[in-house]
Image 1: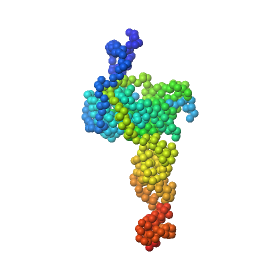
Image 2: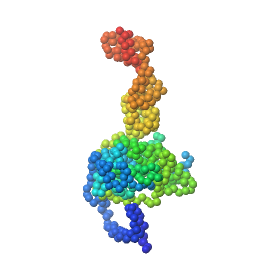
Image 3: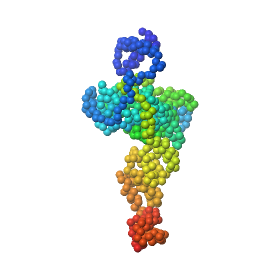
Image 4: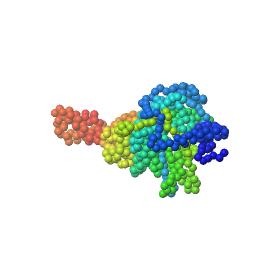
Length: 100
Length: 483
């Protein structure tokens, strides 16, 4: 099926899926592409609103400058931290070797 | 270097500096990760466990603004944190909390000098983020079956200081980092330790034909953990890229790691795609309004910076620009120098000792001046012994080395004082006779019962002997002769 250039392409869906480490089938690529196209159409409608006089929203809440003093507090023990680790060695989390 | 004359070198640097805080960026875990047992400095926040929420460490924000002010940056009134999304095992949340489009600061500059000539590099921005955990590979990295992760470092506050592509040689890049490191130490936001990774540097290196405006293809060089490594890696890249271009080849945009042992850079990954981190505003952290009053408070506590101290050392002590630059490149070294002078040492002599043998020994031992057993008070005394002619320059060098090598420099110093001391009565009698002959009034005063007068006479004797007379013997002989 030919894809209009302005629309979300299957390639882009595959790219986003790869970034999110999601393995999806060819059928799913099509399904999600079409669903995402609908969402993006809705976004396009929002984008048409005139926001030139409205400051960008960085956060939905109006709170600002929520900070804490620099004091160190008790942490978990290594045993507690590792409790749910799928794999460990000594006091380390263990993963398959990472090579760039 | 004929090889680079057809191309201009363009370097921009990204320096990551851990902020000196007690606790992590977004949680209360200790930042003391170098000594803690693996994964003992962790909590639900820095492990990215579900339901945990970050809270901003005020001191880390203030340190970043402090750094930005020291680098002449603008501090916008509004700032926020963003999520930088990527997967890597050292990043427990699957994203790093960083700053994207509204960092704490931008548009600054850093002044430094190369061989006494002034240079300026633009500072694009200084922003704040969190460090990652540390991966350890089992055995050789190429054959490793598994990697081990320690999350103690995850969440340690980390500043990223980005320069404009304003540096034009490996020398300039090295001097820039040296000056930047000095500033971070002066203002107390970072300990300057490159070897342990608390201060790290990446370089973007590219070449362009002389006269061209557009930049060439850039290569990002990582993993340089000393000034020397920065210099060597950039020099290596200049030669490598020149050779590729001269041979009619094309450079690829890529990340290369500096291998210090082999003295070369190795391709780590080719950047086929533009990096795709899908930044978005961090929903767990409300934004920050940076009031002008807050900025003024932070600015008012800035100490004298290296450039100002350098100028002061030149003006007050008549040091050469080069000596003053090197002395002020490290805060402890500048303080050591000033303390030695305050105790009475001539400035030039103090500078020569600190920049000469002392620095040579320290460099060889990978030690900082504040960790040396020789303190300013010892160096000042040694210089005084040379100036008063008690010991020769050659002997002073030997004495200094002995002082430096010993856990306590006092015995070597005392030995130097004593080694040439005149204790023999034959020689001392000559001095005593001369003192008595030249100071009739004081001799009369002493005879009349003024003990003070004897002190004066002893002083005259010390002066005549250039400080070498044994004071106890001198006093005994004076009493004997006058009585």
